[in-house]
Image (cartoon, rainbow, N blue to C red; front, side):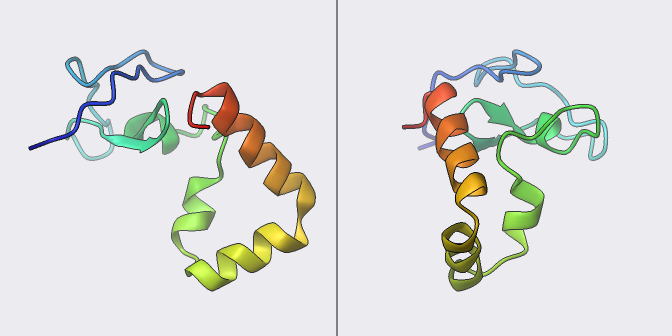
Length: 87
């Protein structure tokens, strides 16, 4: 069974029951972060509150090292997650 989060995207307003269509793929969007859909995360005109593209290419160990060495990035991520209701 598919889990419903009852979120709406902070950028386009799509929801679980009213997904937007990703212009690149032509497919319905999906959640990539709390309150951010996949279509908006990939758009050039939307600031990604969590730099998802760079994180997706990292392994867990590399990601942890990055977050430990960059307190500003860690603080930005925590702040964004709190603002979007993820923490």
